[in-house]
Image 1: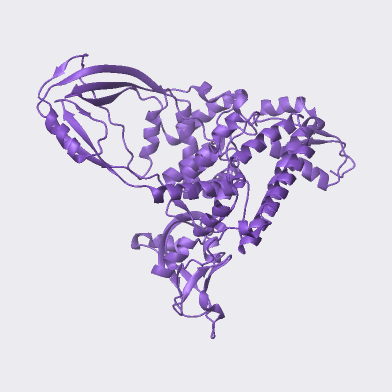
Image 2 (image 1 turned 60 degrees about the horizontal axis):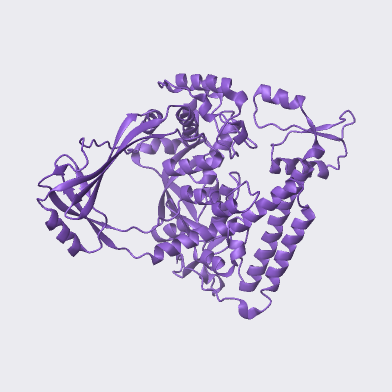
Length: 610
């Protein structure tokens, strides 16, 4: 920027709010005064780049976009530092508060309350056997009533009330954006959102995948030809039969924001994919098969619904007959590459029945069931909740184009921060709120723990972009909101009592006293005694960080209780690959703890390679 021969600059960052902010901050920090042109493209096809370079615009056109981006960053910063300090001082413990993080935590705590308050109830249904098909009643609360209906229908005549036949289609799923890829990788492989992002980033740096942090599911019109070439490369590379290439399915430039959808690149043609680490190979496989699926034919099936009347009660029967498998052929090919067994769709053909037709001498039986509580959040479902957060509020608020909490680029980091700060924890595939998380949500006001704040912000940030309101007015509103929030807690009587009792996560293997969780470690409560106990497990333990694992509270609990934990996807720096092993805690009674790996006999070769 400072070279004399440089007369002007081109801002070629992402074509969006955050891309504009990144360039302007660098430009200002360098104290640069030279004129700037703006390159505004979402596609990296040669034709798009050449067109964009031929149509460079004066950067002043994007001043309001920069203002909106800076307001968003400042407002998040102000809320984070002020609200976090306010509640931490009030309750004498570190309580991190954020516009995105706190509503996400609220999802976890609300779901946990729903599960804890859920009352399981048995229900019963009566099924009638009509010979070559069965029909079932609505749910019945009383077993006695179900038994009465069963006896009442036994051997009687059922009459066809109605027959409804519909032909339905399911379009192929769209290409992946980052969030949908993270959800799918969590569901299929159990990867965390952060792991998926890291694998994808590595593939991007190896030129095997396109830019990771995208919220688009489509490509631009100028990419059609290159996508056709890419599909031909994939077909040869994975040796799969593909009969259809409906490229139009995935083309819509109006729905491409800063970056187009996630794709593999043509570089896979010459790459030795078997040499990739397992995680990267699996993510690339998802990208490859999703592209083939997205350009395939629709899935078509016939659905038949029949209502039968028997002794004054309505019974239902339905069937699904596949007419065209379409994109599900490719999906089945992908599922065959997985170790786990996958469910196949059950087809059932109902007989050709007419209205008022009688079926005599039906048999009857009772089926018993039990109502199920809501499920705990997994990384998959939490990402979905974040993506769709406060969807109704976004619809009602004018100009709020974006929706959800965070962005595809930040959601993984938000989940990891909740865990790192001790507000949530991973328990196998589930993400659960901790006691500290419940305490935080209990004390923060609704305005901060609701996703509605984000919807309101998005509307106003859009107004700043469109020069309808000034950035100064927006920031004044933020400062006023924070001032009122802080003043509302001046009366100490308003402060709620929250638990200060520390959670015991296990017994110290040295002295048997309780072990607590600290900010940076898990420590023995006897550290102040005479003589003191210095047993400690550090969260940033090099053994785990080198294997790209977080030393979570759940891991500490298992090590303290069992001394060993079976772990998956441990990273080997030496071989640049991932493996599974049992990690054993070794403690000799000294201050420091060490860990070692144990492998099954069949995996001894892997152990040597590590």
